[in-house]
Image: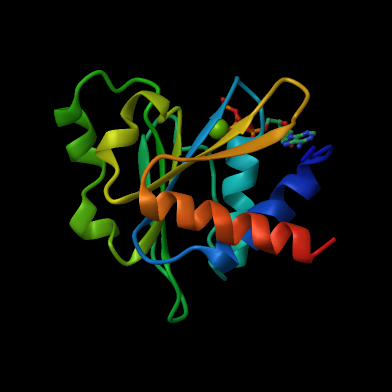
Length: 152
Ligand SMILES: Nc1ncnc2c1ncn2[C@@H]1O[C@H](COP(=O)(O)OP(=O)(O)OP(=O)(O)O)[C@@H](O)[C@H]1O
Ligand SMILES: [Mg+2]
């Protein structure tokens, strides 16, 4: 799938928010400016979170509580993380079990994000691909792909 505009990137995020389940984590992989934070803004909208989602680059981790009965959003940027211990300061499986976690630059840490981990890659032409890293991560990808083909 190719996502050509920032608006389309947000719409993709909003649709994926609708198929996310509690405890799911999606690693966002793509170069500087690929659209990772833009995607996260769309996810927040899909979760009906009205707080403005900004880049977590300097805070590294931001928790957006649900304003409805939906999922919380955990939005991380782990570019500067070098050890698993540092990750634990930013994210814990128990905190995130009722939320949806998005991790910019999380590819080196896929095994640290719980039972349900998938990855979305954005290449230089903004082609999007999905990889499941665990069984539940695969299930998330299946729900995403089902929804994307249904919407066409
Ligand atoms: N699919 C897209 N097509 C065109 N422009 C996009 C797309 N997605 C995002 N943009 C634009 O690209 C710029 C960078 O987006 P964004 O900040 O989301 O990238 P990022 O991957 O989070 O970057 P960083 O690596 O710095 O965190 C923004 O101006 C955004 O509006
Ligand atoms: Mg970003």
